[in-house]
Length: 77
Image (cartoon, one colour):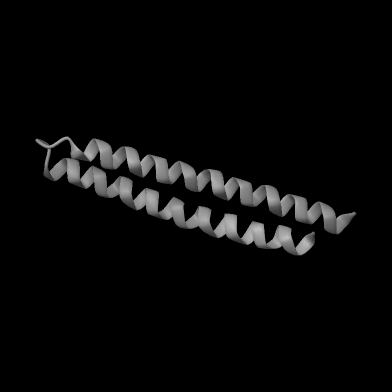
């Protein structure tokens, strides 16, 4: 049980951090795209996708924290 929680914790935490960074980079890129090409509205879709990726990263990282807390609780019991 402990090893399964550790694997889940590592996968979710690392994936969450990767998606957080990617989403933030995409959002900054969308903002720069808006500043350079204000006539095109493609930056809206790119920015929306960036927010989806960023929020997915928050969710995955949060789930990783939950698995870590469960792992610590099992260790104490």
